[in-house]
Image (cartoon, rainbow, N blue to C red; front, top):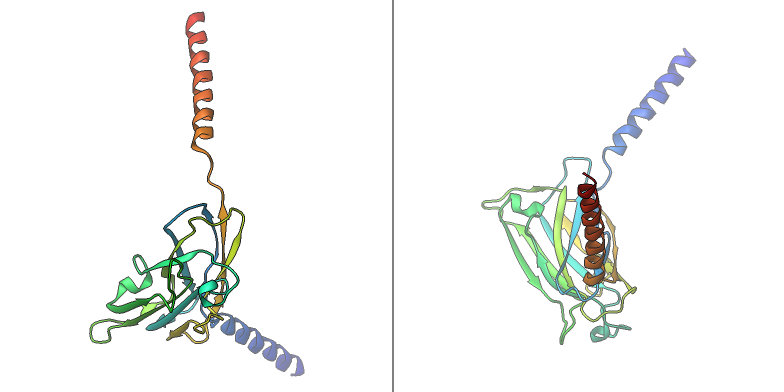
Length: 209
């Protein structure tokens, strides 16, 4: 009898653990991104995933590069956030209202932005929390190659990003790294060399025939 009770307890524990693993919070991931030097419009997709049928109905996205730049008393100016784009995102599955405001930034750099999006409840429905949540467009013109910058959705000067409908999502901040762009001349030279070698080989084969 005791063995049966013990086995039953273990079975209940395993069922609870399996059930709990299927109720993990949604994950919002900024990701790490290598951007070619002097790129003025690089699209960074912010992904949301969940293994349950969770939906999202409202979002206040707050995105910040590093410490916000010198305009906000930061240490240096980094990539500028030049746009928030909802093309190809989960929000396209419903009718929604969106507004974009470039924070308090002035001058040439905008390293702190806020974008509000909410479902039009008169005609829209909640959207599944799986896919691209939002696209953040950045400009890295003039920034040094090899330098990395944080891109955060939490701990910004305007606060954390918030999501209505997602119970305590896990938000993973990300990184932007400036990388060199290969010289076109080097690639063309390599192609030309390979082409000449193949051409000479073909001519020799023809001459032997």
